[in-house]
Amino acid sequence: MGFCHSKHVESTFNKVYNTFLWRTGDDYKYVQALCTPQIQDRIESFMEQDVSSVEDSVNSVTEIIIDSAKSARISQKLNKPKKEGGKCKKKKLWYNTDCLTLKRDLKKAAADLRKCPSIAYLSHYRYLRKKYRSQLNMSRSAYKQNILNQMEGLSNVNPQEYWKLFDRLRELNSTAKTNQISTNEWFAHFSNLLNSVTGTINTSIESQWDKYIESNKDIFNELNFEITKKEVADAIGRLKKGKASGPDLVRNEMLKAGVTTILPMLHRLFNRILNSGIYPKDWRCNILLPLHKKGSPQVTDNYRGIAIGSCLAKLFCSVLNKRLCTFASANNNPKMSNWLSK
Image (tube, rainbow, N blue to C red; front, side):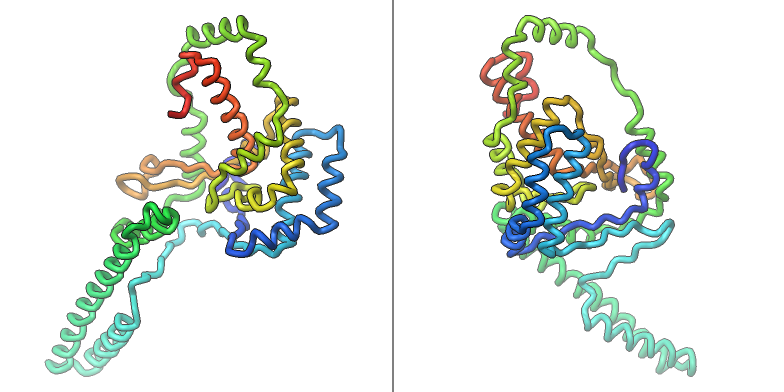
């Protein structure tokens, strides 16, 4: 589910997103793809452009990064939207061959009972039904215990795998039915939520900030210095792997693996955005995923939207955030202490 600009928001609901799946060995393949003559020519062409709009610059960089991944034949996965009003029946991973065999025997016993109703057939059917239910409980319990055993000690060693197992355990314990909320209902819900005005603007704080900035113009000039390659490289180093990609499909793994090759390109792009003062429109587009929090799964108010944005946009904001935090710490201004990371 994507939320972009108002004119084409609804069209994004049924969009199919090709997400890249990063596996062991893909780093090397991606670096090799970036070093091909075709990609190098495109990078050089971008670096030689003196005048280009912010939107065109973002599109050029994104296309180079994504085309390199396609050239490296990085695996992709189709994220297809759910059919309107369709039921999503998930496969029960704990349902093993023993359960399947007993189910077949039970169906055969039921068919025999319908054909020839008798005490003998009825007793046999009841016996198999009881045995089948018992097997379901045993298989489910064994599957649950196996997950719990795997989760022990994983929270610190491998958090990503830990939370995957946690999700499987939560699905196993969940008795809620799949939601049947239509895309139109989701669109109306999030449109009202995101466009609603909550709270009031504290004009006194704004006026205090205006006075502070006015009296410290020289100090604030350092926030507008050109972004350095070191700032970008450090921000890439802080990126975490295994995070979801936004609508542009760029992953953190691509940025980390190809940092040596794409660093000059990102450095030029970020400074072009900073100097223009224009934030790219494509970076304002996020994929909104509703996460059920409480109550009935049929009520939109019981969900919280998770916004998945562009990894390039997050990288740019990370550079600015680090610069702001460094500036605030150096100036030791109490008015800035509220948003500094502890």
